[in-house]
Length: 204
Image (cartoon, rainbow, N blue to C red; front, side, top):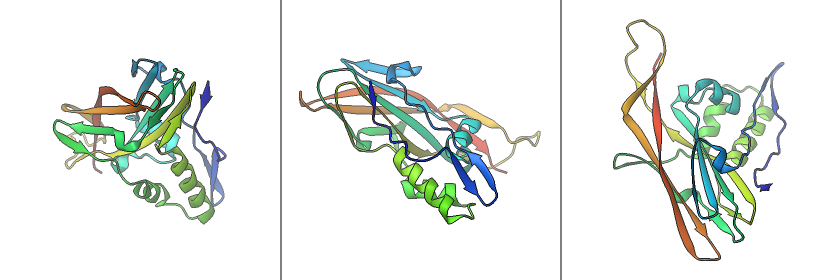
């Protein structure tokens, strides 16, 4: 199995005299994810980063706290023909309301807000650009993994006990649909809708 993930950066970025580590999101076969589906010989796996610690490990800061939920989309082509993936063929909705992914530059600016080193900011920018979900053609045996970043909401009032906590509401379920194009057959395969839960954080 080949993977199309581009890993160009060291895991450790430097900020002044201190350092922190960014854990790379692993590239796995799509069908290994608990939220996954196989159509023919193509599999799609979804990993919504809904845990604050995971978000901080993978991106250097807690993106959830900043109103951003990263969603990892993995596509594995176990067939003999080519498959194409495109960010425009991924749709997230809540009911009938479409939720557009945030522009990559917005994510880069959020991650780099507190950086004092231009070199570190450049590294983070390069890392995020290579991590973001992009157009790809998957040959036989290829697996591709990319991330889209979606906005999430905040509750305006803190809980009575004064603690900042994660509050998940059953009424805020999200549906994610992915379409993959089989190029040689000139056919399109629909995956999902996958059910995700939108996390809400109390604002400090």
